[in-house]
Amino acid sequence: MREEMKNKGETETKLKQHFVLVHGISGGAWCWYKIRCLVENSGYKVSCIDLKSAGIDLSDANSVHTFDDYNKPLMEFMSSLPDNEQVILVGHSAGGLSITQASHKFGKKIRLAVYVGATMLKLGFCTDQDVKDGVPDLSAFGEDVYQLGFGLGHDQPPTSAIVKQEYQRKIIYQMSPQEDSTLAAMLLRPGPILAIQDARFTEEKGGDEVDRVPRVYIRTVHDNVIKPEQQDAMIKRWPPSDVYVLESDHSPFFSAPFLLFGLLVKAAASV
Image 1 (spheres, one colour):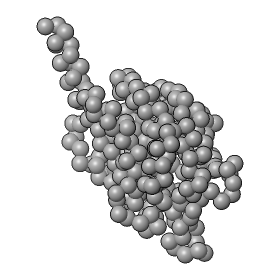
Image 2 (image 1 turned 45 degrees about the horizontal axis):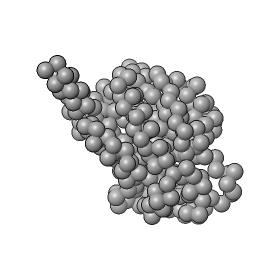
Image 3 (image 1 turned 30 degrees about the vertical axis):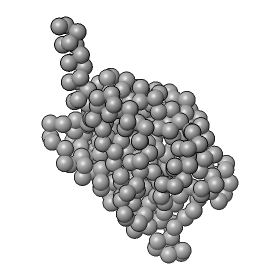
């Protein structure tokens, strides 16, 4: 009887946990297919968001010029949640900016924010240091790794970007299974870099709403995109409650899904 009550209690706890997974630039909800399977099969609830112009959203990245527009799907999702529901937000790469904005606006609905090899800047790109810490520098792989889009004309800054296919595996997926990097090459879409560069957040009334949201950072130690030294700099500037270490490339949902899932469950249990 006691064992049955214990199992029932564990099941009820899992059912209360709702993971919301947010992809990075060029990705989509599809990135999380392994993690979603593990989460759901373990009894938790999970939602995967497609930001504007990503995944199956039909918008053209070259037409998305502001971060508010790009992140609108996540903000609408958060707004639709009942006031008494709290979720665990998980952001990968530039998805860290998305969950930070949600933390500013919907802090009371967030049980925990988890940054996975992600850009973690309290107010977004407000200073040169923010850019240095949070923007990928892929110059080590050559000067021509991006395919750019110029939706406002070639005399204006680029509106979209995607890592060229011949560079994707060595930069983003060097430790991932070949079939996953092949899948990604088929599904990656240009990301609205003009919109992401526009990510700047103002403190909500009261000033510390975002700081009331517990945060965990998962360091991806073989990351060629958000490099370990950039991750460490952001952690130092805005310290989370916990830092976990993962031996993975920039895409642990492919290269280390079981370990990543374990850390997500551990983080969820910590709050």
